[in-house]
Amino acid sequence: MTRSAELFERAQHSIPGGVNSPVRAFKGVGGTPIFIQKAKGAYMYDEDGQRYIDYIGSWGPMITGHADEDILDAVRQRLELGLSYGAPTALETEMAETLCQLVPSMQKVRMVNSGTEATMSAIRLARGYTGRDKILKFEGCYHGHSDSLLVKAGSGALTFGVPTSPGVPADFAQHTLTLPYNDIPALEACFAQVGQEIACIIVEPVAGNMNCIPPQPGYLEALRRVCDQYGTLLIFDEVMTGFRVALGGAQAHYQVTPDLTTLGKIVGGGLPVGAFGGRKEVMDHLSPLGPVYQAGTLSGNPLAMAAGLALLRKIQAPGFHQQLSDYVTRLCAGLEAAAAEAGIPVITQAVGGMFGLFFTDQPSVNNFNAATACDLEAFNRFFHAMLKEGVYLAPSAYEAGFVSSCHGEEELQLTLEAAQKAFATLKK
Ligand code: PLP
Image 1 (tube, rainbow, N blue to C red):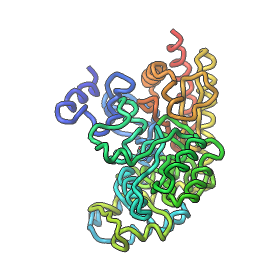
Image 2 (cartoon, helix red, strand yellow):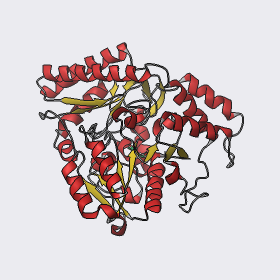
Image 3 (cartoon, rainbow, N blue to C red):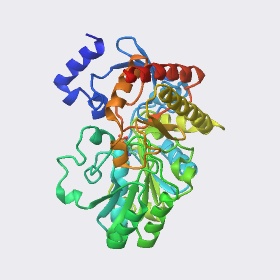
Image 4 (cartoon, rainbow, N blue to C red):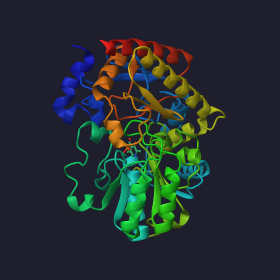
C-alpha cells in the first residue's frame, strides 16, 4: 500500500470522503488521490516521493509556480507583524488600487476570502441594486457553492452527477434561470420573456468548469447588449480567468466590459482570497455606505494581501502572459499530434494560460452538452496513464488545465513524451 493510500484510508474516518473539496477525491477518474507533501516550481511531490509536472497549480493561483521565493519573502516579512487585526491596513488599499488599475472596469473593490464569497456577494449586490430577484447563469458554469449558484453547475457537481445540489431549496433555485452557454438565440428569447425581472447575468467569460470552452465570437458582446437593453447587470466571474488569460483578465482579452467582476485564486497568491468590484455607483450600495450587507472577519487579511500583491507585481513583467500562452499553444499542438499519431480523436481548446483536452471527433466543443458527450472513459484512462508517467492533470474531464511561468522546455518535452506513451496505452 502506498503512503498516499494509507493517508486516504485514514482521512476518510474523520473527513467526509477524505477530502476538503470534492474533486480532490479522484471519484470522477477512479482510483485514490495522491497526497502531496511539497511543491516547487512546476512540480509537486507526493508522500511516496514521486514527482509530478503539475497542470493544476492549486486550481489556478500558482501562476508563477509553487513556493515562489518572492511570494514567500513577502509573506515572511508580514508574518512578524501579526496575522490579523480586524481593522483597516494600508495593504488593503494598496491591493484595491492595484486591482482597480489592472482591471479598470473595477472602480471600487471589496476583498473577501474565496471565489464563492465573491460571487455570492456580487449576486446579492446586483439584486440589491436592481431590486430584482432573478439571476441568469449558464449550464456548466461554476460560480462557487452558494445556494443560488449551485444550479446546473459544472466541474465538481458535474463530476458527481448532481447538477443541482440537494440542500438548495427549490424556492432559491427558482430564481436562478439557466441557459446553454454560447447560445445567442436562447439568450435573446429569455430576455424577451423575462428580461425586466433579471437582476444580473453571471458568466465565466471563458468557461473553465466544463473543461475549457471559450466564448464564440460575438457571444460576450451579446450578453453586454441584452444587459444594457434590460437594465440587467453583467457579472464576469473571473475567479479563474482573472490575471490568467491576460493581465486584465478575459474582459481585456475580449474587450467587453462587465458591470461587476469577481476574482479569486491568483489574487491571493495561494492564500484564501477573493474579491469583487465594479462600477462605483453599484459598489457604493454595499454596507457601510449602502444598504446591501456584506462582511468578513478575515477579509483583507494582511498575509493574504502581501502574498497577492507580490504575485500581482510579478505577473506585470513584460511578456509574462505571452510566455504562458506560447507554452499552452505548443502543449496543445503536441498533445493533438501525439493523439493523432495513436489514431485517437482528440481536440484541444485554450485561451492564454488555460487549456482543455477533449476526447471527441467534433471540431469544437462549445457548451455543456457537447462537453458531456465527449468520451469520459478515454479521458479517465488517459489521466491515469499520464499520472503514472509523472504528469498531474486535473482529476476530472470537466476541469481546465493551468500552466505556470515555471513550465518550460524541459517540462514540455517530458509532458509530450508522457502523452505519447499514454495515448499508446489507450489504443490497446
Ligand atoms: N468561480 C469560478 C469561475 C471558479 O472556477 C471557482 C472555483 O473553482 C469559484 C468561482 C469558486 O471559488 P472558490 O473555490 O475559491 O470558492
